[in-house]
Length: 274
Image 1: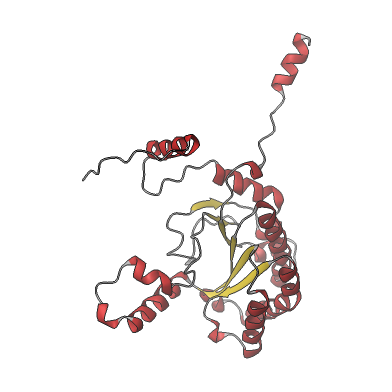
Image 2 (image 1 turned 135 degrees about the vertical axis):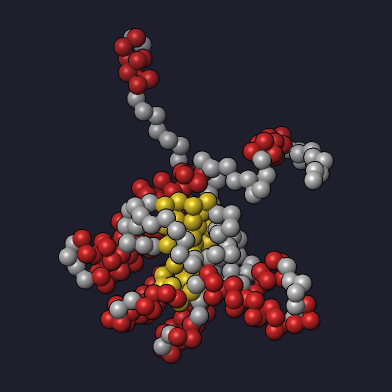
């Protein structure tokens, strides 16, 4: 090989490893922000952005299936979204019903379980029936669980859990622990999100999974939700795979545990310190 060809080869950018080669998050949670702005930039009604956002949901579900993600949680409609213009809320409810009618069969075919998480009492009776039927149809599926948060708020989740705990164990009031409360939360038994994604440029969690996001890795992007495709999904996964998750430990402890795992032995326990 000539010297010139060697230098040219060295100068070529090396392809990044596939996201499939790294550790995949078990649970991804997403705030799908930017549907209205996407439509406004195109001089379209806001509902057009919501319809296009459904396409982004389909794409994201496919990516999660390919990557082996076990849980995907989407913030579809918050308890604060009732404050939006009545016409938009009505159209969102219609879109929700249409999505349930059209998508449940496809979810079932692909082994996806659907859960609707939130306070359903404010929904129309026919929507509540569709939700119950959709959940029953997909209840035994295990390939991916799709949690759709509708009329949900993180504060509401914690309050309803506390109220249920107090009713169940009134004699222990004043002595409750985190472990006591967790079974009453909406995501009891579900791994906490490893990766939280928010599209649309805002950098806050907006009353979403306040309890569950304590140790999640946060990824914010200015890309609007209808434009969130494979490229941005892969960027979020790459960002997650480059981070060191410590859970209160030091970086040295994490690295020692990783070395020990590679060597097939348990790390030595350190002496407790106060």
